[in-house]
Length: 455
Image (tube, rainbow, N blue to C red):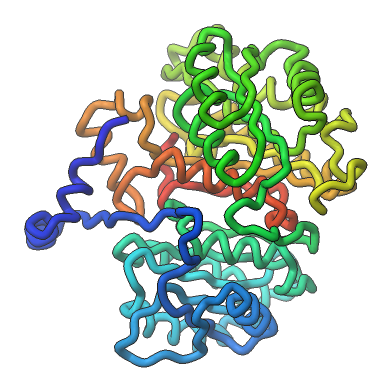
């Protein structure tokens, strides 16, 4: 992984002074999660007079957060929550939004802005839908205006869903915390009352068993470490050629290793058999394994196209069929944890925006997002969820091989002016795997610092 020397330089005294004088980007050192650390290091201001404002303020008080409805003009704040869930016309936005704007200069480093709104698609009234959609637009624009490592994101509540639902609390905590350091300009939809709040927020996956494919290195290894840190037992899966690295990761997380080609027709059954033998349960599946075989479409051959489709999407479809047919993966039948099964798939911003020379990869990752959206309905009866995470430019061995100039440009083309780390992707996957994310399903959540550079 190539070191970001520019970000290190900017965060020195002389570097900050020089780069500011030249008008160069100012990437900040991001506040990332550490177990035992306070959720936020300063006051959080809750704006608005809606039911959600009262419910979320009470939730923050339960977490020992210094909650304010008003704050002095010289006080610094760690976060601002703008509750706009009761707007019915664009004119209703003015008071709360302008109050939000007046507070932005008081945000601390790595500050958080979170808007709360109702789903635009939930209303057929033109004025109401316009107002709700307007909240999404202003949130994205605010994210572009954030400074010093700050982020702006939104929580989208289904109509009639009470903001005290576990999923709303889970989304709020994730977006306030250092777990969401590289998530900005995004929206977490909460559509149901499913889910439960963990007894221990530092170990929300305690007692659960997770399988991670492509776990031998990079993002996959980081996912395995993060799930283990959060309490899960981990089955690390990768191809036999990566056996030595796979064993090292499995040993590091006190898990088990399974050497497996996920394109095998019986891959799902073999994972289930391994889980049954070693743990007697399987609760979380993370489809991380993936490959690139880049080539312009005009030069694309059958091998490059078929191999990427086979690994990146066909294997997931086949394995999901096996998992969903198995009682081992049916947490409702086992009655554990107050939650159903969790599936999280790795997509990519390439699948959203496309990327030159990646027609096969972009097709496979767009396919992942389509699969997730369609499979969500199959998990409703089990109180389970399936979601996707779409990374942008992440500092990995693969991106370290990009030519220096191209890599530097890619790092700066987002609102945070830097590349993300593998742990940023892992934190988002851990959140979507957790009990508190039970109200969110069928979502693709980007981890890209608010950019569309292909992963």
